[in-house]
Image (cartoon, rainbow, N blue to C red; front, side):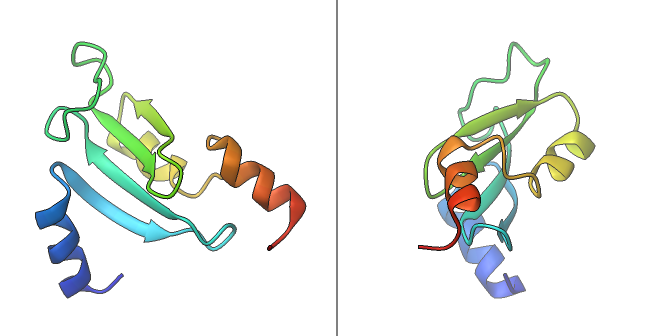
Length: 89
């Protein structure tokens, strides 16, 4: 995603820190500051969330580093994981 696309996405999605398309599945993954995006942050203990933009799956994280690392992993979104196992449609 280029800079202009990222700026536009940030205007559209509150709390968005990063967004990219998965090389494995082709789906879009977003990284959010949970509270700003009005996502559950476990009372401040999990301030970051990764979101599969295509399927709506959300995973909460305690650190930004963990959230960024999680963006590349396919297994947390069951629909993406199933698609990766079955190959491209």
